View 1: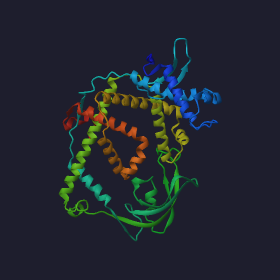
View 2 (view 1 turned 180 degrees about the horizontal axis):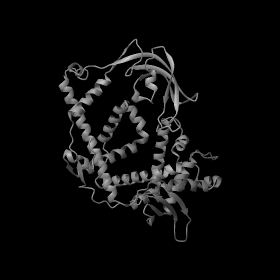
View 3 (view 1 turned 90 degrees about the vertical axis):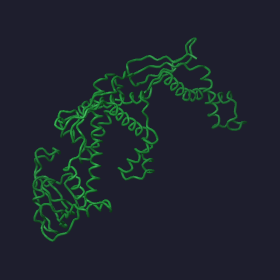
View 4 (view 1 turned 60 degrees about the horizontal axis):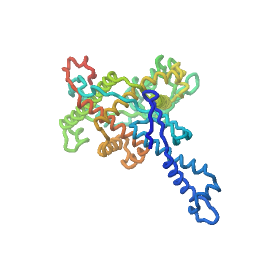
Length: 442
């Protein structure tokens, strides 16, 4: 059998011409006939038992040829791809070439493929890192965060003061017209100037439970929503109740909330261990980011346009989702930013190219170093996601099943980045020199 021929049209696109032998075609036609004849009734024969010639006389040969080609084309295409060592990144465009004298039917497939990447110097990348440590102030802040999480709200019979938590209804209006995002009902609210636009919190101070009044507040000129920036709003506010936050003392009794046999010293030690673990993880992520930047600077290769287009589209969809969650339409956002979607796509294209180049580089390294996602890696990732989202493991597996390949790809990329850091030459700087390193201090 004549092998397929591969013609490279550019660094990321090839044209493959694949011969289909008469034997392959006839075998496919016979399989197609056997499948078709099961579902037709021909007088004098049981279903599936009619001769092929009689079937062709009644229904024609075209239906058999069409089904045969549907069967044989994917088979010969995938075999040719494997034999040529190509890695397609999208579906091929295919056409059947007619028989010529002395030549069989041929399939011509044009497909985008991963570029050939000549890897170099990905081991031994020189990196610098500040020393990893946790000081007492960080432990104090972690303790204070635990203390704030343990707050108790105690009702009080007096007017609202700054620092109280009041349950509010409010509706905001500009020039008498309600605006999106300016309404709440039965909303527990910390009365703090830092949490709201100027005038809102101070306007509520002095109100009593059951009281309703109008409060004027002003949106700053640099407010993120340009439609509201610089405008005065009038809020109709009702206070339902007033509570005072009470925080526990940080002592041995407080520590026993988290571990019955613990004291404050043990709680501080546990917090320090967690903070050090977190600091090490941040340091590794920063080192991996710098290593990736170094790799990108050292490797230049063509990118498949279809991959860049897909990644650009993904970034645009992410942006649209973020805008929708902010409570405005995409059209409003474009108007506020005074930009067109085409301009935004052009801007995102640079980031898309970086992501695609990073992905291809990491995949190439993973292939050379035989880095794979084992069963234990997948189980650990599913367990982490289950804890993060509070979902039972079985339910999460069912949700992830359609995206399991993406999950596995993500695990391999993470393991490859770990490989780069593990095989880098990391120099730890002195604290005074941390500002000049390529890894930011905590």
